[in-house]
Image (cartoon, rainbow, N blue to C red; front, side):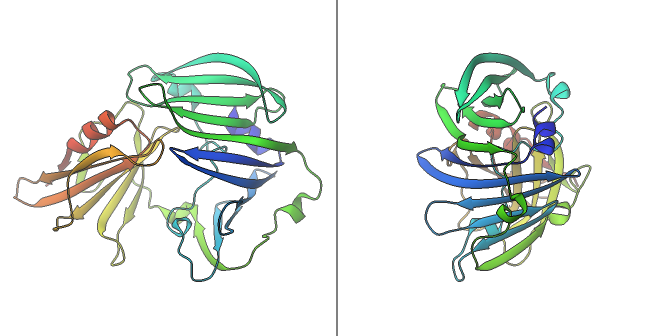
Length: 290
């Protein structure tokens, strides 16, 4: 559905992204050729930053000498769904309902609500273009009914002219290149530690080994196709504290101290887009496999 639409359609546009109390605006150029995606995402607020995507290669550009979180986790626009979402499989855990028909960015759209059957995820609402099936709006709703995060096109042009020219970078600066195929080492499960409980539908999708520049030893990422979270394992020090709470928008962070049967003590931190109570249950279930 949504993933098919982005593979068939090219477009340019601008959209806003609100996360909690923070608001940002972006321009995007999206091209699909022979099953390969090409994108240019540019920040319109603050210092100029761009992300270029060519298939699975992602290049982040930002001004020289300026740090950027884009160097660490290259994002895809929240208006581009994850690759190969199995919507039929997700019916085991979600209910889909049409809320209304509306106009978004000047186009006729249908608003679909995706709600967990077991109340262990956030409610998601998608505004889908009726003509093309492209995603025009995404919104994440918290357990109390508040809007936690919103991304919505304010202007979009389908099949624009001079697409190749529009995909070229418009700024110069420091470049960091990632290959999303090799950014995470794929695993069927964790080596010597894992959560004993996960919300239904979540599976291990990747593993990162920490290095001397990172405080964590390992990080495992889990996803159900719509939401994801990461579990970080680190050595305990004076700075590590147990915590639970929401970060920005729909992102939560929960930390726990666990002990192995051999008496080792580790710090476990979960960061991701799941409700606090779900995050606490996952983090508290982590055990070491001796």
